[in-house]
Image (cartoon, rainbow, N blue to C red; front, side, top):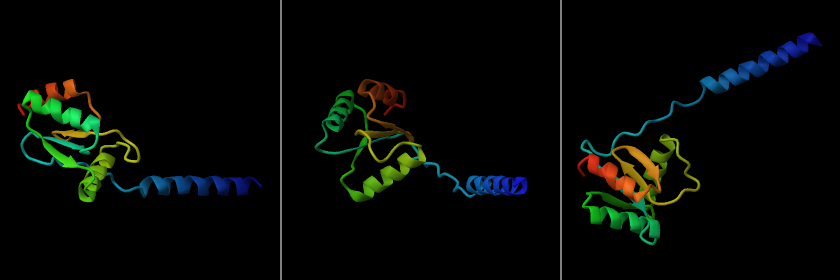
Length: 120
């Protein structure tokens, strides 16, 4: 009986080790541009997205807007979010990529402040 328990423990430990060492190496996100940038991902019909875009325009911040209704954009965003360790099943919009730092539904005042430090 003791030998059987020992064998089961060894098999269980071996399986756990195999799972640990067989995991894929997580990707890291490469910056979208060489120069500092701000990319906003959202929907045209989303009030939060429109408020963020309005606040950025009023502050004179340069940014690029991408609609997640485009499947290619959504796929890229989800891959970048997963690589950053963010949940992709349910999240609020907009998602902002400020110089390769992703944030979900950021505070607009803080976003403007951070963008100004990058001289955008």
